[in-house]
Image (tube, rainbow, N blue to C red; front, side, top):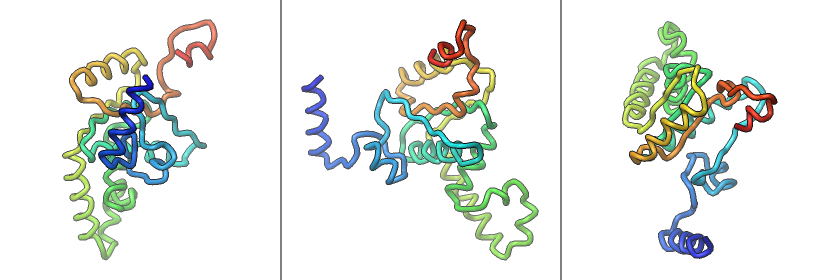
Length: 180
């Protein structure tokens, strides 16, 4: 392990790599983590309506657009809601315009907004990103599908939103079910 670790450090040094993991697209997060590291679990926690999902989806989009394979299991939002949020984040367009497109008629900049949204959608279509929005999924099902994707070389990042909504196995104690 020591030899492999040191060889990895030397290889990253020789290559001029600033990060040892996958860049999130957020310099401050990358600085704190060194990038997302293989086989590690990261959690995003905050109060309700603080933007946890959009932060996670922006990280997923950034990584997918960098050519990495990303799989998202969303237990809270539909795939359309998530892609809408990603398109808005990439384009810099307020999500209200996609939720209520009639508002575009009142905006003097509507042509620019349409162009930016279309460019973001075109960009996202090239991303190596898959989203499963089934809400009745178990951790075993996610694990099975993730192993298959990984075996095919199609998984660099796995994101589960919202892990608290996973169907838990029947156990005597809730803490053991969550730990599972």
